[in-house]
Image (tube, rainbow, N blue to C red):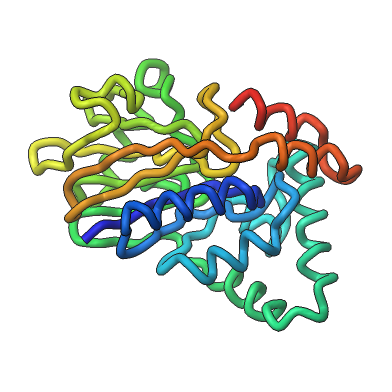
Length: 256
């Protein structure tokens, strides 16, 4: 059994298509999305349709929630993109998927469990909105300890939200994928708990513009993957849209 876990597509169709193609080559049995299908990017409808078609589970991200309800505590670029995305969903009156999209967004779950594994968008403690940053391992260890306590006995929790891939241990400690004992691979075991950030498909922020996701084999072996896609294609679509902040294009190119 192989599960692919993706997150934070952010309306980046080119990145999503490249990742799905890569997942297909790895013959994953199931795809789980940790949320934030929407926001920031230029192709919200197409991304939402693909996620509805390809994913067995999709969780609620803070941008998905903001589009469906109202953005709260968002910066100007993120808030503007949310309102623009909502207008695209509302304006597509001819599509047979229009009602399906709204129903889908309104029913997104906050968490999902498989055996000893928990899946959320943000954190075990606050599934939609809490950020777990790599530096928290050193500057705010009590925050991580509090989240490990809320895993309710699970051995591993998969998250997104910060767009930075890597693994938090309950020491606490953070390890990026290329610094793992076996680079880009981690084995879930009963002797330690881990919170695993899968990174972002559509807007990586670890200075690597390639899309990021993970696969899980037999609920045990985790492998991080990076996928090249036509970054400039998405960046140009943002630049040509006067209602999206131009900074959103430049950060894609820089992977920040």
